[in-house]
Image (cartoon, rainbow, N blue to C red; front, top):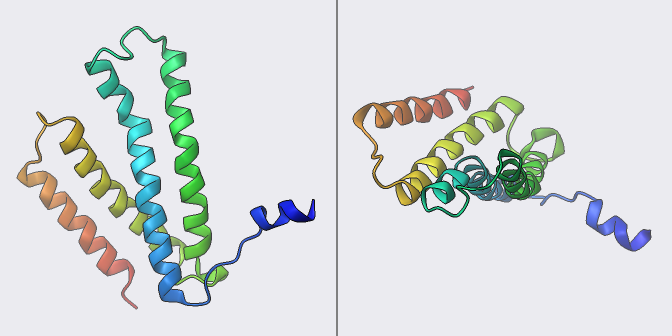
Length: 139
């Protein structure tokens, strides 16, 4: 049991800047998995791979991908949270997560679903999110 303990203990870096970078990197990875779990099955259906799958099969496929999202998301929140030595409070973590989520979504959607382009109102919404990040970090 002692050997297993090293896999379940949590030891963030001593440097808050590094914890912030690790957090953002893990959030990016997490959101890649999340976007693929939420929307990847639609691309598989378009290409005919999963068009005959029952709904429960599609759900199981998405959950299998979402497992890896959680494997990145949970450590990101733990490493980044101020009470664990990270630089971000709870609200900051959430706003960063939402920004990263939409950026990753926009990139993956452009790659997988090329016929559905981004329009000016989408960019305006992204600018509002960037403004939200600015405001949430104001003292």
